[in-house]
Length: 585
Image (tube, rainbow, N blue to C red; front, side, top):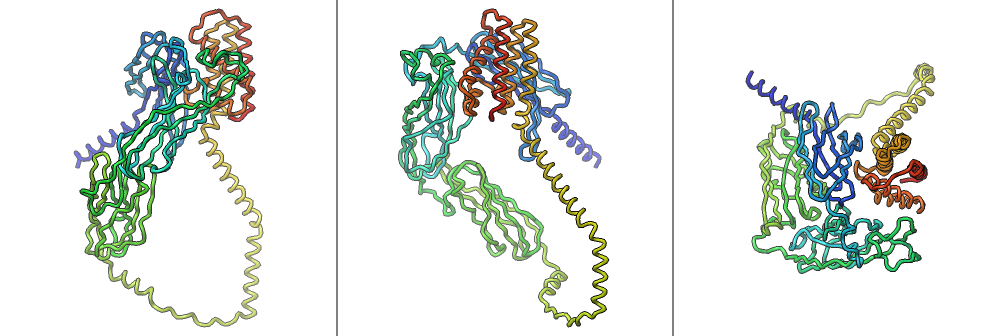
């Protein structure tokens, strides 16, 4: 017993140690940039009590500048997530593929190893000037497999590539998809990124959908995609919209122009399900599934209900799956139809059963038959038998049930109440009234206060969980702090610190207002959000110029800067931020 207790103590100690271990992750966004751009390196630390800033390794060709640290708390599915993020701006000095680390980060006397990578390519200005829309923006469509089966789900991905600096609205239109033979397509935008094509960086927007063919045959997808590109007004005197790669000066008024993007043909061959080897229990499940069965309770009497839960997970046509057949035989009685519960990538059936007698020792194995689209064969998976303890009903219990069926005699007649009885009742009611009367107004008042306190506290909790609202309230304070640092740097005639402070003001303010994660604040995302919110065109153009001027100076643009120029730039930024406070983002 001592040895067992000792092992148990060690086991609990290891569990406690693992529970207290902190977690550190390193991300670089974007992982692909041009020379002259910057990336954001973020180290997120969770479940650590004593934190200290990490020491980044020296990487030749890269320069790291601290962008401060932030804290964030979220509450998802009843679980809290709190982490501290250390942010750094990464400025490349040359092109190439860089590996940052591996290096160690220590907290709470524990150490974790971190590593990241960054790819830097030449500037798009070095590439050939675009001659047509296809040099600036194009689309591709792909399927996740070359062939499929009838009713088997398959995935489709639509990717839209746009050259750095090209501005587009969020509106995308897709035409020319097959109108028959396919289940309804529901496109959803997923996380995009960047890609290098012909030594040029393109931003990539990706949309995904899952569908299935309702009949066999060859399906061809050759749609066209229409996007809305932001270009200067037509009254601008220019020989061609391609005279410069980014459509000219940022100070001109702009308009949107629809651009149709042809998509290269994609083909998928859909085959019918084979009849050879088709089991008798097949009911139409197609895909790849895992099958689990559980039951509760496991100790019952004859006639007691037992909930049998059958869970299917994996990838397939869950909406077409029917409940597996339960071999009840003469041992179990089934109650009602199975209750169906479906989620993404899973479906669950709950069936209430009841043992008929005390001879039942367990729930037999249940079979589920499906067609495996990866292997092209029918498969039968079988659950494990579930032991069940059924105890016979005692005689005393049977007598209690029998007693419920006895006939109850009606009570004897009650005589009418006399006058003395009524007097006693009246006197008792008066005494009760005297005791209750003082509480007639205090009880409702107390209940009203309790209800008000309950809903007030609930509202307070909801607002505390509203991370976006909390961050919106932090935005002005964060901007003022950064602008004070800019004023101090301007008085010291320190342009480097001044532009760093202006950049912090931009990223801190719009990061909080737009509820963006650290490192995700960019001029394009910010300007698009402000345009949708209704900020006037002049202010948007001024802010775009501020972004580009601050970024250019921080990247090392040569040239002296006078205090008057810095003062004008800071005043313009303060005026823009005041206008942003008046609009709803």
